[in-house]
Image 1: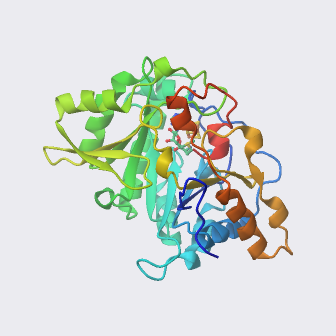
Image 2: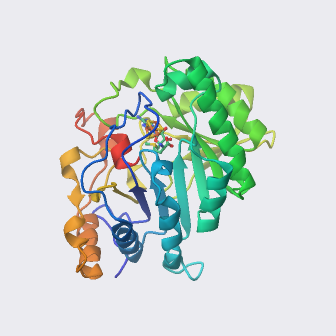
Image 3: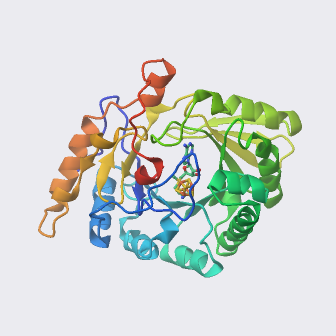
Length: 348
Ligand code: SAM
Ligand code: SF4
């Protein structure tokens, strides 16, 4: 089937597939459900969804959640999608399989298993460099719980590196959400940590996803402010934003790597957004800020006797009608609604 293009002429390029809505942390800016939605997709159904998205032009698969390492079928799925890889540089098919994880469950063994299954990239998330800061941002009881989580994530970085996820080629990165009034004092320590460990730090503006996090614009530390603060210590050179990318990148002028900022609130990038999101229970969403009831249930096309072409046609129809540009509308003051599907359910 031909590559799908939406009403704003944006191609389908990335499938973000959530494997679980559950998480072993409870970051206050995300606040996941404690339970799975009913009717989780089976391994076969997940593979069907990936295959259909690839047939419509998706070249990148990001596995997420909730916390995807809670899902015992993760490695099996990564291995199962390998035949969908592109056979040539420009040809159709998957070119990248990535994982976003909080890292707390990433043992050395699991990192090796993920690599052996065929995972290309890992992005780990960490919002502070002290026990107290990590506890505050991960919803943990106290600083000593935060210290244990911090130690686990730092170990996970090294497990991933040792398993072959090389940060020098972008195969290992660190995500951090920085909130004004909460962990803005962690910006420089996080950057220092990533410089020491040779990782790109991806700084994400606090976003108004979900309905539970009490988001306010006042708590958003803008990407420009983050870049300014970092640049005052370590001068930066702009590298720009890749087509269809979420992050604007900057290199350190002293040659010690790069940072990236995801400015979804202050500098929306809806204009070339190419991401389709599918939840663990098979609901497709075409925007991170979608309302819960606006998703399309793919399960009617995922029955044992379903013809794969029907799922492709359903997804193609959904993508063809897509005209979401929530962040741009918010920027223009046109959107004040707070009826958003939750982040951990959507898969971020
Ligand atoms: N549990 C995994 C993790 O934390 O990496 C994967 C799922 S999580 C929803 C994916 C990413 O979304 C994480 O890097 C997290 O920090 C980010 N995130 C969650 N809620 C956010 C919010 N309100 N604003 C900005 N980023 C958010
Ligand atoms: Fe869990 Fe990730 Fe949400 Fe934090 S951001 S609660 S680690 S899903």
